[in-house]
Amino acid sequence: MTGVMKENLPETKWPESLPHPHEEKIFSIICGNTHIKWAIHEGVSMAFSPTCCWRTRLLSDNEMNDQTPIKVLSHHLPQPALMAIFGRTHGNMTRQLALEHSQGRAAVMLTIYLVSTNDEQARRIAWCFQHIPTRIYRMRPDDFFTKRMGRADSMGVDRLSAMKAVGDMVGFPALVIDGGSRLTYTAADASGKIVGGGISLGLAAKFHAICENSHHAHGMEVAHETEALMHAAADMVEAGKPLDFFASNTKQAVISAVLHEYALLLRGVIKSYLREICDENVTLTNNTDENGSKRTQIVFTGGDCDLFAKLLSSDKNLFVAEEDIAPYEHKVSRHLMAFGIAVVLKEKLKEHKEEPASEMDKLLIGCRVAKEFEQPDEDGDLVYRGTISGSVRDGKTETSYLVLYDDVDTEELSLVEVHAALTLYANVGEKIVGQTVHKMVIQKKNKSTNAASKMEEMDEDVNSVSEQNRSEAAAKAATYRAAQLHKTNVKAKNAARPGGEKKVTPSKRALSSSSASKQKKTKKVDPKSYINHRLCKFFGDNESDLFFGIIASYDEKVNFWHVDYDDGDEEEYDENDVKQGIALYERNKDLDPTLKQGMGQYS
Image (cartoon, rainbow, N blue to C red; front, side, top):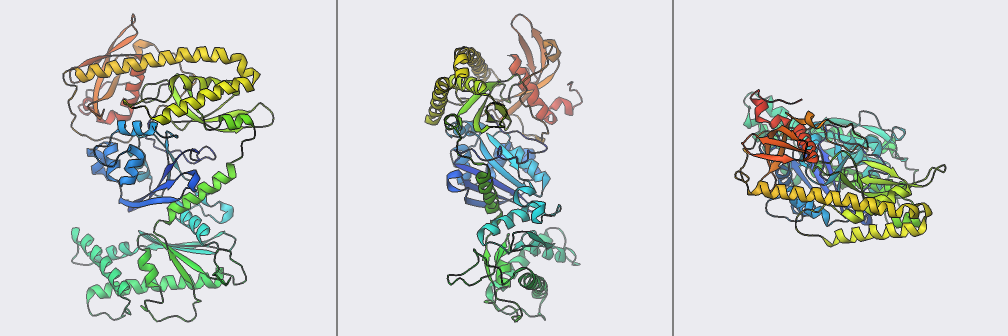
Protein backbone atom coordinates (compact mmCIF):
# COMPACT_ATOMS: atom_id res chain seq x y z
CA MET A 1 0.00 0.00 0.00
CA THR A 2 1.61 3.24 -1.04
CA GLY A 3 1.37 6.65 0.52
CA VAL A 4 -1.12 9.04 -1.02
CA MET A 5 -1.05 12.71 -1.78
CA LYS A 6 -3.76 14.67 -0.04
CA GLU A 7 -4.56 18.35 -0.15
CA ASN A 8 -5.06 18.23 3.61
CA LEU A 9 -2.84 15.77 5.43
CA PRO A 10 -4.44 13.91 8.34
CA GLU A 11 -3.71 15.50 11.68
CA THR A 12 -2.52 13.50 14.65
CA LYS A 13 -5.15 11.62 16.61
CA TRP A 14 -4.04 9.65 19.64
CA PRO A 15 -3.47 6.77 20.16
CA GLU A 16 -4.08 5.92 16.48
CA SER A 17 -1.18 8.12 15.35
CA LEU A 18 1.40 6.51 17.63
CA PRO A 19 4.20 4.60 15.92
CA HIS A 20 3.81 0.86 15.56
CA PRO A 21 5.37 -0.91 18.59
CA HIS A 22 7.80 -2.70 16.28
CA GLU A 23 8.84 0.28 14.15
CA GLU A 24 12.61 0.55 14.32
CA LYS A 25 12.78 3.95 12.62
CA ILE A 26 10.41 6.87 12.24
CA PHE A 27 10.86 10.21 10.50
CA SER A 28 10.06 13.79 11.46
CA ILE A 29 10.01 16.71 9.03
CA ILE A 30 9.80 20.41 9.85
CA CYS A 31 8.81 22.67 6.94
CA GLY A 32 9.81 26.29 7.43
CA ASN A 33 9.93 29.32 5.17
CA THR A 34 13.48 28.86 3.90
CA HIS A 35 14.49 25.25 4.63
CA ILE A 36 13.19 21.78 5.42
CA LYS A 37 14.58 20.07 8.52
CA TRP A 38 14.52 16.29 8.56
CA ALA A 39 15.28 13.73 11.25
CA ILE A 40 15.40 9.96 11.64
CA HIS A 41 14.29 8.80 15.09
CA GLU A 42 14.77 5.50 16.83
CA GLY A 43 11.63 3.49 17.59
CA VAL A 44 9.72 2.86 20.79
CA SER A 45 12.49 0.89 22.48
CA MET A 46 14.89 3.87 22.24
CA ALA A 47 12.34 6.55 23.25
CA PHE A 48 12.19 8.04 19.73
CA SER A 49 15.62 9.69 20.07
CA PRO A 50 16.71 11.59 16.93
CA THR A 51 19.83 9.93 15.53
CA CYS A 52 20.29 11.67 12.18
CA CYS A 53 19.30 15.27 11.47
CA TRP A 54 19.84 17.25 8.28
CA ARG A 55 18.58 20.35 6.49
CA THR A 56 17.75 20.88 2.81
CA ARG A 57 16.42 23.61 0.59
CA LEU A 58 12.69 23.93 -0.02
CA LEU A 59 11.09 21.78 -2.73
CA SER A 60 11.07 23.84 -5.93
CA ASP A 61 8.68 24.02 -8.88
CA ASN A 62 11.46 23.08 -11.30
CA GLU A 63 12.39 19.77 -9.70
CA MET A 64 8.74 18.79 -9.20
CA ASN A 65 7.86 19.61 -12.81
CA ASP A 66 10.76 17.68 -14.34
CA GLN A 67 11.25 14.66 -12.06
CA THR A 68 9.27 11.82 -10.48
CA PRO A 69 8.28 12.07 -6.80
CA ILE A 70 10.77 9.39 -5.74
CA LYS A 71 13.64 11.02 -7.62
CA VAL A 72 12.89 14.39 -6.03
CA LEU A 73 12.70 12.75 -2.60
CA SER A 74 15.96 10.83 -3.00
CA HIS A 75 17.82 14.05 -3.81
CA HIS A 76 16.90 15.39 -0.37
CA LEU A 77 17.89 12.31 1.63
CA PRO A 78 21.27 11.26 3.08
CA GLN A 79 22.44 7.65 3.07
CA PRO A 80 20.84 6.61 6.40
CA ALA A 81 17.44 7.81 5.16
CA LEU A 82 17.85 6.08 1.79
CA MET A 83 18.70 2.86 3.63
CA ALA A 84 15.65 3.16 5.90
CA ILE A 85 13.27 3.68 2.96
CA PHE A 86 14.80 1.79 0.02
CA GLY A 87 17.22 -0.63 1.67
CA ARG A 88 20.17 0.73 -0.30
CA THR A 89 22.26 3.92 -0.40
CA HIS A 90 23.36 4.05 -4.04
CA GLY A 91 21.80 3.55 -7.45
CA ASN A 92 18.38 4.31 -8.84
CA MET A 93 15.72 4.54 -6.11
CA THR A 94 12.33 3.19 -7.20
CA ARG A 95 8.87 2.45 -5.89
CA GLN A 96 9.63 -1.25 -6.36
CA LEU A 97 12.63 -1.03 -4.05
CA ALA A 98 10.63 0.80 -1.39
CA LEU A 99 7.85 -1.81 -1.50
CA GLU A 100 10.29 -4.71 -1.38
CA HIS A 101 12.19 -3.20 1.54
CA SER A 102 8.97 -2.51 3.47
CA GLN A 103 8.14 -6.22 3.45
CA GLY A 104 11.20 -6.97 5.56
CA ARG A 105 10.06 -4.66 8.35
CA ALA A 106 7.93 -5.79 11.25
CA ALA A 107 5.92 -2.61 10.65
CA VAL A 108 5.30 -2.25 6.92
CA MET A 109 4.38 1.43 6.96
CA LEU A 110 6.95 4.10 7.79
CA THR A 111 5.48 6.73 10.13
CA ILE A 112 6.31 10.38 9.45
CA TYR A 113 5.44 13.30 11.73
CA LEU A 114 5.21 16.65 10.01
CA VAL A 115 5.51 20.05 11.69
CA SER A 116 4.88 22.85 9.24
CA THR A 117 4.34 26.58 9.06
CA ASN A 118 4.40 26.30 5.27
CA ASP A 119 1.27 24.65 3.82
CA GLU A 120 2.58 24.51 0.26
CA GLN A 121 5.76 22.72 1.30
CA ALA A 122 3.73 20.31 3.44
CA ARG A 123 1.72 19.33 0.35
CA ARG A 124 4.91 18.91 -1.63
CA ILE A 125 6.41 16.68 1.04
CA ALA A 126 3.34 14.45 0.82
CA TRP A 127 3.65 14.44 -2.98
CA CYS A 128 7.22 13.16 -2.69
CA PHE A 129 6.14 10.25 -0.47
CA GLN A 130 3.04 9.28 -2.45
CA HIS A 131 4.59 6.05 -3.81
CA ILE A 132 6.32 5.06 -0.56
CA PRO A 133 4.60 2.87 2.08
CA THR A 134 4.11 5.64 4.63
CA ARG A 135 1.58 7.18 6.95
CA ILE A 136 2.11 10.90 7.37
CA TYR A 137 0.58 12.85 10.25
CA ARG A 138 0.59 16.60 10.57
CA MET A 139 1.14 17.50 14.21
CA ARG A 140 -1.27 19.93 15.88
CA PRO A 141 -0.31 22.81 18.18
CA ASP A 142 -2.23 21.09 21.00
CA ASP A 143 0.14 18.14 20.74
CA PHE A 144 2.81 20.36 22.27
CA PHE A 145 0.97 22.90 24.42
CA THR A 146 -2.73 23.39 25.07
CA LYS A 147 -4.38 26.77 25.50
CA ARG A 148 -4.47 26.12 29.24
CA MET A 149 -0.70 25.91 29.04
CA GLY A 150 -0.51 29.38 27.55
CA ARG A 151 -0.57 28.57 23.85
CA ALA A 152 -1.89 31.41 21.70
CA ASP A 153 -3.80 30.58 18.52
CA SER A 154 -1.29 32.46 16.40
CA MET A 155 1.81 30.80 17.89
CA GLY A 156 3.67 28.70 15.33
CA VAL A 157 3.88 24.98 15.93
CA ASP A 158 7.64 25.17 15.30
CA ARG A 159 8.11 27.44 18.32
CA LEU A 160 5.92 25.15 20.40
CA SER A 161 7.93 22.07 19.49
CA ALA A 162 11.18 23.84 20.39
CA MET A 163 9.82 24.85 23.80
CA LYS A 164 8.59 21.30 24.37
CA ALA A 165 12.13 20.03 23.88
CA VAL A 166 13.65 22.64 26.17
CA GLY A 167 11.23 21.79 28.96
CA ASP A 168 12.43 18.20 28.77
CA MET A 169 16.07 19.18 28.34
CA VAL A 170 16.62 21.80 31.07
CA GLY A 171 13.25 22.11 32.80
CA PHE A 172 11.18 25.22 33.47
CA PRO A 173 11.26 28.19 33.51
CA ALA A 174 12.79 28.30 30.05
CA LEU A 175 13.75 30.80 27.36
CA VAL A 176 14.26 29.70 23.74
CA ILE A 177 15.96 32.00 21.25
CA ASP A 178 15.54 30.75 17.67
CA GLY A 179 17.84 32.33 15.10
CA GLY A 180 16.33 31.14 11.84
CA SER A 181 14.72 32.92 8.90
CA ARG A 182 12.99 34.86 11.66
CA LEU A 183 14.46 35.65 15.03
CA THR A 184 12.00 34.49 17.67
CA TYR A 185 12.15 34.19 21.42
CA THR A 186 9.68 32.31 23.60
CA ALA A 187 9.49 32.07 27.39
CA ALA A 188 7.71 29.72 29.77
CA ASP A 189 7.35 30.09 33.53
CA ALA A 190 8.26 27.65 36.29
CA SER A 191 4.97 25.75 35.88
CA GLY A 192 5.65 25.15 32.18
CA LYS A 193 3.06 27.65 31.03
CA ILE A 194 4.02 29.73 28.01
CA VAL A 195 4.30 33.41 28.89
CA GLY A 196 4.84 34.72 25.36
CA GLY A 197 7.64 35.95 23.16
CA GLY A 198 8.58 38.05 20.17
CA ILE A 199 9.31 37.85 16.45
CA SER A 200 11.73 39.83 14.31
CA LEU A 201 13.62 39.47 11.04
CA GLY A 202 16.34 36.85 11.06
CA LEU A 203 19.93 37.82 10.47
CA ALA A 204 20.02 36.85 6.79
CA ALA A 205 16.67 38.57 6.16
CA LYS A 206 17.97 41.73 7.82
CA PHE A 207 21.13 41.78 5.68
CA HIS A 208 19.06 40.98 2.57
CA ALA A 209 16.73 43.90 3.24
CA ILE A 210 19.67 46.28 3.62
CA CYS A 211 21.32 45.08 0.40
CA GLU A 212 18.05 45.15 -1.52
CA ASN A 213 17.41 48.76 -0.54
CA SER A 214 20.89 50.00 -1.38
CA HIS A 215 21.04 52.04 -4.57
CA HIS A 216 23.52 49.80 -6.40
CA ALA A 217 22.36 46.25 -5.50
CA HIS A 218 19.95 44.25 -7.63
CA GLY A 219 19.29 40.68 -8.82
CA MET A 220 21.98 38.14 -7.97
CA GLU A 221 24.09 40.84 -6.37
CA VAL A 222 21.67 40.99 -3.44
CA ALA A 223 22.00 37.28 -2.71
CA HIS A 224 25.77 37.40 -3.11
CA GLU A 225 26.17 40.43 -0.86
CA THR A 226 23.83 38.93 1.75
CA GLU A 227 25.89 35.75 1.87
CA ALA A 228 29.13 37.76 2.12
CA LEU A 229 27.73 39.77 5.05
CA MET A 230 26.64 36.57 6.83
CA HIS A 231 30.14 35.08 6.55
CA ALA A 232 31.78 38.32 7.64
CA ALA A 233 29.44 38.64 10.64
CA ALA A 234 30.23 35.09 11.74
CA ASP A 235 33.95 35.80 11.44
CA MET A 236 33.68 39.01 13.47
CA VAL A 237 31.75 37.29 16.25
CA GLU A 238 34.13 34.34 16.30
CA ALA A 239 37.15 36.67 16.50
CA GLY A 240 35.80 38.06 19.77
CA LYS A 241 36.99 41.61 19.18
CA PRO A 242 34.84 44.48 20.50
CA LEU A 243 32.48 45.82 17.84
CA ASP A 244 32.94 49.51 17.06
CA PHE A 245 29.96 51.81 16.87
CA PHE A 246 31.95 53.93 14.41
CA ALA A 247 33.14 51.59 11.64
CA SER A 248 35.59 52.71 8.97
CA ASN A 249 34.03 50.95 5.95
CA THR A 250 30.54 50.12 4.67
CA LYS A 251 30.60 46.36 5.30
CA GLN A 252 31.76 46.73 8.89
CA ALA A 253 29.29 49.55 9.44
CA VAL A 254 26.38 47.37 8.31
CA ILE A 255 27.48 44.34 10.34
CA SER A 256 28.28 46.32 13.47
CA ALA A 257 24.96 48.18 13.42
CA VAL A 258 22.93 45.00 12.86
CA LEU A 259 24.76 43.01 15.54
CA HIS A 260 24.44 45.86 18.04
CA GLU A 261 20.71 45.96 17.27
CA TYR A 262 20.27 42.26 17.92
CA ALA A 263 22.46 42.36 21.02
CA LEU A 264 20.47 45.23 22.48
CA LEU A 265 17.18 43.44 21.80
CA LEU A 266 18.24 40.06 23.16
CA ARG A 267 19.96 41.51 26.23
CA GLY A 268 16.72 43.25 27.06
CA VAL A 269 14.81 40.01 26.56
CA ILE A 270 17.19 38.06 28.80
CA LYS A 271 17.18 40.75 31.47
CA SER A 272 13.36 40.77 31.59
CA TYR A 273 13.24 36.97 31.59
CA LEU A 274 15.65 36.68 34.51
CA ARG A 275 13.93 39.38 36.55
CA GLU A 276 10.26 38.77 35.77
CA ILE A 277 9.95 35.05 35.04
CA CYS A 278 12.79 33.32 36.86
CA ASP A 279 11.84 33.20 40.51
CA GLU A 280 14.85 32.62 42.74
CA ASN A 281 12.62 30.89 45.29
CA VAL A 282 11.59 28.19 42.82
CA THR A 283 13.57 24.97 43.01
CA LEU A 284 14.36 23.73 39.51
CA THR A 285 15.13 20.03 39.47
CA ASN A 286 16.74 20.12 36.05
CA ASN A 287 18.53 23.45 36.46
CA THR A 288 20.87 22.84 39.38
CA ASP A 289 24.58 22.23 39.42
CA GLU A 290 26.35 19.44 41.31
CA ASN A 291 26.20 21.49 44.52
CA GLY A 292 22.43 21.95 44.25
CA SER A 293 22.73 25.66 43.42
CA LYS A 294 20.26 27.19 41.02
CA ARG A 295 21.52 27.59 37.49
CA THR A 296 19.49 29.45 34.86
CA GLN A 297 19.90 28.19 31.32
CA ILE A 298 18.88 29.79 28.05
CA VAL A 299 18.68 27.65 24.91
CA PHE A 300 19.62 28.83 21.43
CA THR A 301 18.42 27.01 18.30
CA GLY A 302 18.02 27.63 14.58
CA GLY A 303 20.51 28.04 11.76
CA ASP A 304 22.24 31.02 13.39
CA CYS A 305 22.13 29.67 16.95
CA ASP A 306 25.91 29.53 17.34
CA LEU A 307 26.35 33.13 16.21
CA PHE A 308 23.72 34.52 18.58
CA ALA A 309 24.99 32.45 21.51
CA LYS A 310 28.52 33.75 20.96
CA LEU A 311 27.26 37.29 20.35
CA LEU A 312 25.78 37.39 23.84
CA SER A 313 28.53 35.42 25.54
CA SER A 314 30.60 37.34 28.08
CA ASP A 315 33.61 35.27 27.02
CA LYS A 316 33.74 37.02 23.65
CA ASN A 317 33.84 40.54 25.14
CA LEU A 318 32.07 41.97 22.10
CA PHE A 319 30.26 44.51 24.24
CA VAL A 320 30.73 46.16 27.57
CA ALA A 321 29.25 43.81 30.18
CA GLU A 322 26.05 44.89 31.87
CA GLU A 323 26.38 44.37 35.60
CA ASP A 324 22.62 44.38 36.18
CA ILE A 325 22.13 41.13 34.20
CA ALA A 326 22.24 38.11 36.47
CA PRO A 327 24.66 35.35 35.43
CA TYR A 328 23.21 32.59 33.29
CA GLU A 329 24.39 29.64 31.23
CA HIS A 330 23.29 28.67 27.76
CA LYS A 331 22.91 25.61 25.59
CA VAL A 332 22.98 25.39 21.81
CA SER A 333 20.84 22.81 19.99
CA ARG A 334 20.51 23.21 16.24
CA HIS A 335 17.83 20.49 15.87
CA LEU A 336 15.69 21.32 18.88
CA MET A 337 12.32 20.79 17.16
CA ALA A 338 13.09 17.14 16.34
CA PHE A 339 13.68 16.53 20.05
CA GLY A 340 10.38 18.29 20.81
CA ILE A 341 8.55 15.83 18.57
CA ALA A 342 10.27 12.96 20.39
CA VAL A 343 9.10 14.33 23.74
CA VAL A 344 5.47 14.44 22.53
CA LEU A 345 5.66 10.85 21.29
CA LYS A 346 7.06 9.68 24.61
CA GLU A 347 4.30 11.48 26.50
CA LYS A 348 1.54 10.16 24.24
CA LEU A 349 2.90 6.63 24.46
CA LYS A 350 2.99 6.81 28.25
CA GLU A 351 -0.50 8.32 28.35
CA HIS A 352 -2.08 5.67 26.13
CA LYS A 353 0.10 2.66 26.79
CA GLU A 354 -1.67 0.15 28.97
CA GLU A 355 -0.44 -3.26 29.95
CA PRO A 356 -2.52 -5.89 28.14
CA ALA A 357 -5.56 -6.39 30.34
CA SER A 358 -6.19 -9.98 29.29
CA GLU A 359 -4.54 -13.01 27.75
CA MET A 360 -6.47 -12.24 24.56
CA ASP A 361 -4.89 -8.77 24.42
CA LYS A 362 -1.43 -10.27 24.82
CA LEU A 363 -2.19 -12.70 22.02
CA LEU A 364 -3.67 -10.27 19.49
CA ILE A 365 -2.09 -6.84 19.85
CA GLY A 366 0.62 -6.42 17.24
CA CYS A 367 -0.68 -9.17 14.93
CA ARG A 368 -1.11 -8.51 11.22
CA VAL A 369 -4.58 -8.91 9.70
CA ALA A 370 -6.22 -8.65 6.28
CA LYS A 371 -9.72 -7.77 5.18
CA GLU A 372 -11.46 -7.57 1.82
CA PHE A 373 -13.28 -4.38 0.79
CA GLU A 374 -15.22 -3.44 -2.33
CA GLN A 375 -13.14 -0.37 -3.16
CA PRO A 376 -9.69 -1.35 -4.52
CA ASP A 377 -6.50 0.29 -3.39
CA GLU A 378 -4.08 2.14 -5.67
CA ASP A 379 -2.72 -1.17 -6.94
CA GLY A 380 -6.19 -2.49 -7.73
CA ASP A 381 -6.27 -4.91 -4.80
CA LEU A 382 -9.38 -5.48 -2.73
CA VAL A 383 -7.47 -6.97 0.21
CA TYR A 384 -6.12 -4.45 2.72
CA ARG A 385 -3.57 -5.29 5.38
CA GLY A 386 -3.36 -3.79 8.83
CA THR A 387 -2.14 -4.26 12.39
CA ILE A 388 -4.10 -4.77 15.61
CA SER A 389 -2.99 -1.77 17.66
CA GLY A 390 -5.09 -2.07 20.81
CA SER A 391 -8.26 -3.21 22.56
CA VAL A 392 -11.39 -1.13 23.06
CA ARG A 393 -13.55 -1.54 26.16
CA ASP A 394 -16.53 0.65 26.99
CA GLY A 395 -17.96 -1.50 29.78
CA LYS A 396 -21.23 -1.98 27.91
CA THR A 397 -20.39 -4.19 24.96
CA GLU A 398 -17.91 -6.98 24.38
CA THR A 399 -14.27 -6.10 23.85
CA SER A 400 -13.37 -5.05 20.32
CA TYR A 401 -9.96 -4.48 18.77
CA LEU A 402 -8.68 -1.45 16.92
CA VAL A 403 -7.08 -2.19 13.56
CA LEU A 404 -4.80 0.36 11.94
CA TYR A 405 -4.76 -0.36 8.21
CA ASP A 406 -1.70 0.37 6.13
CA ASP A 407 -3.53 3.21 4.37
CA VAL A 408 -4.02 4.94 7.77
CA ASP A 409 -7.74 4.08 8.04
CA THR A 410 -8.87 2.53 11.33
CA GLU A 411 -11.67 0.15 12.22
CA GLU A 412 -12.92 -1.63 15.33
CA LEU A 413 -13.45 -5.38 14.90
CA SER A 414 -15.23 -7.85 17.15
CA LEU A 415 -13.47 -11.04 18.21
CA VAL A 416 -15.19 -13.00 15.47
CA GLU A 417 -14.20 -10.39 12.88
CA VAL A 418 -10.63 -10.37 14.21
CA HIS A 419 -10.45 -14.14 13.76
CA ALA A 420 -11.68 -13.79 10.17
CA ALA A 421 -9.09 -11.08 9.50
CA LEU A 422 -6.28 -13.14 11.03
CA THR A 423 -7.33 -16.17 9.00
CA LEU A 424 -7.41 -14.22 5.73
CA TYR A 425 -3.96 -12.79 6.46
CA ALA A 426 -2.69 -16.28 7.22
CA ASN A 427 -3.83 -17.21 3.68
CA VAL A 428 -2.64 -14.17 1.72
CA GLY A 429 0.24 -12.83 3.84
CA GLU A 430 1.87 -9.55 2.89
CA LYS A 431 1.59 -8.02 -0.55
CA ILE A 432 4.59 -9.70 -2.16
CA VAL A 433 6.68 -7.46 -4.38
CA GLY A 434 9.65 -8.80 -6.34
CA GLN A 435 11.27 -12.23 -6.15
CA THR A 436 12.53 -12.19 -2.56
CA VAL A 437 10.35 -13.25 0.37
CA HIS A 438 11.81 -11.76 3.54
CA LYS A 439 12.12 -13.85 6.68
CA MET A 440 10.04 -11.23 8.52
CA VAL A 441 7.12 -11.83 6.11
CA ILE A 442 7.04 -15.50 7.11
CA GLN A 443 7.31 -14.64 10.81
CA LYS A 444 4.38 -12.22 10.65
CA LYS A 445 2.27 -14.76 8.80
CA ASN A 446 3.08 -17.50 11.32
CA LYS A 447 2.25 -15.19 14.23
CA SER A 448 -1.23 -14.42 12.83
CA THR A 449 -1.82 -18.10 12.02
CA ASN A 450 -0.98 -19.13 15.58
CA ALA A 451 -3.10 -16.31 17.05
CA ALA A 452 -6.15 -17.42 15.05
CA SER A 453 -5.68 -20.99 16.22
CA LYS A 454 -5.36 -20.03 19.89
CA MET A 455 -8.43 -17.77 19.64
CA GLU A 456 -10.50 -20.82 18.79
CA GLU A 457 -9.40 -22.43 22.06
CA MET A 458 -10.03 -19.31 24.14
CA ASP A 459 -13.44 -18.15 22.88
CA GLU A 460 -16.54 -20.27 22.16
CA ASP A 461 -18.07 -17.79 19.70
CA VAL A 462 -14.86 -17.72 17.69
CA ASN A 463 -14.64 -21.50 17.75
CA SER A 464 -18.22 -21.83 16.46
CA VAL A 465 -17.42 -19.82 13.30
CA SER A 466 -13.82 -20.91 12.82
CA GLU A 467 -14.57 -23.42 10.04
CA GLN A 468 -16.69 -20.87 8.20
CA ASN A 469 -13.99 -18.23 8.54
CA ARG A 470 -11.33 -20.61 7.22
CA SER A 471 -13.50 -21.61 4.27
CA GLU A 472 -14.29 -18.01 3.35
CA ALA A 473 -10.65 -17.01 3.76
CA ALA A 474 -9.51 -19.81 1.46
CA ALA A 475 -12.02 -18.71 -1.21
CA LYS A 476 -11.02 -15.06 -0.95
CA ALA A 477 -7.34 -16.00 -1.06
CA ALA A 478 -7.92 -18.05 -4.22
CA THR A 479 -9.65 -15.10 -5.87
CA TYR A 480 -6.87 -12.79 -4.71
CA ARG A 481 -4.12 -15.04 -6.08
CA ALA A 482 -5.97 -15.36 -9.41
CA ALA A 483 -6.12 -11.56 -9.67
CA GLN A 484 -2.41 -11.31 -8.84
CA LEU A 485 -1.61 -13.91 -11.50
CA HIS A 486 -3.65 -11.99 -14.05
CA LYS A 487 -1.70 -8.83 -13.24
CA THR A 488 1.59 -10.70 -13.61
CA ASN A 489 0.56 -12.09 -16.99
CA VAL A 490 -0.60 -8.70 -18.22
CA LYS A 491 2.66 -7.09 -17.05
CA ALA A 492 4.70 -9.76 -18.82
CA LYS A 493 2.66 -9.29 -21.99
CA ASN A 494 3.10 -5.54 -21.87
CA ALA A 495 6.84 -5.86 -21.26
CA ALA A 496 7.19 -8.08 -24.33
CA ARG A 497 5.05 -6.00 -26.68
CA PRO A 498 6.59 -3.42 -29.06
CA GLY A 499 6.74 -0.07 -27.33
CA GLY A 500 6.82 -1.63 -23.87
CA GLU A 501 10.16 -0.03 -23.21
CA LYS A 502 9.22 3.44 -24.50
CA LYS A 503 10.02 6.40 -22.34
CA VAL A 504 7.73 9.35 -21.79
CA THR A 505 9.18 12.82 -21.91
CA PRO A 506 8.96 14.25 -18.37
CA SER A 507 6.17 16.76 -17.99
CA LYS A 508 4.47 18.58 -15.15
CA ARG A 509 3.26 16.22 -12.43
CA ALA A 510 0.48 18.07 -10.65
CA LEU A 511 -0.30 17.76 -6.95
CA SER A 512 -3.35 15.61 -6.32
CA SER A 513 -6.07 16.49 -3.86
CA SER A 514 -7.95 13.20 -3.83
CA SER A 515 -7.30 9.57 -3.09
CA ALA A 516 -9.28 6.37 -3.12
CA SER A 517 -10.33 5.07 0.28
CA LYS A 518 -11.92 1.84 1.46
CA GLN A 519 -15.68 1.58 1.51
CA LYS A 520 -17.68 -1.26 2.95
CA LYS A 521 -20.60 -0.58 0.64
CA THR A 522 -20.42 0.69 -2.95
CA LYS A 523 -23.16 1.37 -5.45
CA LYS A 524 -23.49 -1.17 -8.25
CA VAL A 525 -21.99 0.33 -11.41
CA ASP A 526 -23.20 -0.41 -14.96
CA PRO A 527 -20.14 -1.95 -16.66
CA LYS A 528 -20.87 -0.04 -19.87
CA SER A 529 -20.78 3.27 -17.99
CA TYR A 530 -16.98 3.03 -17.99
CA ILE A 531 -16.84 3.24 -21.78
CA ASN A 532 -15.15 6.45 -23.02
CA HIS A 533 -13.56 7.09 -19.65
CA ARG A 534 -9.96 8.22 -19.78
CA LEU A 535 -7.42 6.28 -17.67
CA CYS A 536 -3.69 5.77 -17.35
CA LYS A 537 -1.15 3.19 -16.26
CA PHE A 538 2.54 3.00 -15.36
CA PHE A 539 4.92 1.04 -17.62
CA GLY A 540 8.69 0.86 -18.08
CA ASP A 541 11.53 -0.90 -16.29
CA ASN A 542 10.57 0.58 -12.92
CA GLU A 543 6.94 1.35 -13.71
CA SER A 544 7.87 5.01 -13.83
CA ASP A 545 6.42 5.95 -17.26
CA LEU A 546 2.78 7.00 -17.44
CA PHE A 547 0.71 6.02 -20.50
CA PHE A 548 -2.79 7.38 -21.16
CA GLY A 549 -5.68 5.71 -22.94
CA ILE A 550 -9.45 5.35 -23.22
CA ILE A 551 -11.89 2.52 -22.43
CA ALA A 552 -13.19 1.61 -25.89
CA SER A 553 -15.61 -1.27 -25.25
CA TYR A 554 -16.92 -3.90 -22.82
CA ASP A 555 -17.23 -7.67 -23.42
CA GLU A 556 -20.10 -9.08 -21.32
CA LYS A 557 -19.10 -12.72 -21.97
CA VAL A 558 -15.72 -12.48 -20.25
CA ASN A 559 -16.40 -9.36 -18.15
CA PHE A 560 -13.41 -7.45 -19.57
CA TRP A 561 -13.00 -3.91 -20.86
CA HIS A 562 -10.92 -3.13 -23.95
CA VAL A 563 -8.50 -0.21 -23.55
CA ASP A 564 -6.88 1.69 -26.43
CA TYR A 565 -3.71 3.57 -25.46
CA ASP A 566 -2.91 6.87 -27.12
CA ASP A 567 0.31 5.40 -28.59
CA GLY A 568 -1.65 2.77 -30.54
CA ASP A 569 -1.23 -0.18 -28.16
CA GLU A 570 -4.18 -1.91 -26.54
CA GLU A 571 -4.96 -4.08 -23.51
CA GLU A 572 -7.80 -5.89 -21.72
CA TYR A 573 -8.75 -4.77 -18.19
CA ASP A 574 -10.74 -6.46 -15.45
CA GLU A 575 -12.89 -4.32 -13.13
CA ASN A 576 -10.11 -3.80 -10.59
CA ASP A 577 -7.79 -2.61 -13.36
CA VAL A 578 -10.45 -0.22 -14.60
CA LYS A 579 -11.05 1.31 -11.18
CA GLN A 580 -7.33 1.58 -10.54
CA GLY A 581 -6.69 3.19 -13.93
CA ILE A 582 -9.45 5.75 -13.47
CA ALA A 583 -8.29 6.56 -9.93
CA LEU A 584 -4.71 7.00 -11.18
CA TYR A 585 -6.00 9.23 -13.97
CA GLU A 586 -7.82 11.41 -11.44
CA ARG A 587 -4.51 12.09 -9.70
CA ASN A 588 -2.64 12.76 -12.94
CA LYS A 589 -5.20 14.20 -15.35
CA ASP A 590 -3.19 17.42 -15.67
CA LEU A 591 -0.56 15.35 -17.51
CA ASP A 592 -3.03 14.05 -20.11
CA PRO A 593 -1.75 15.37 -23.49
CA THR A 594 -5.21 15.16 -25.07
CA LEU A 595 -6.64 17.53 -22.46
CA LYS A 596 -3.82 19.96 -23.15
CA GLN A 597 -4.82 19.82 -26.82
CA GLY A 598 -8.51 20.27 -26.01
CA MET A 599 -9.38 16.73 -27.19
CA GLY A 600 -9.89 14.87 -23.93
CA GLN A 601 -13.21 13.30 -22.98
CA TYR A 602 -13.81 12.45 -19.35
CA SER A 603 -16.86 12.50 -17.17
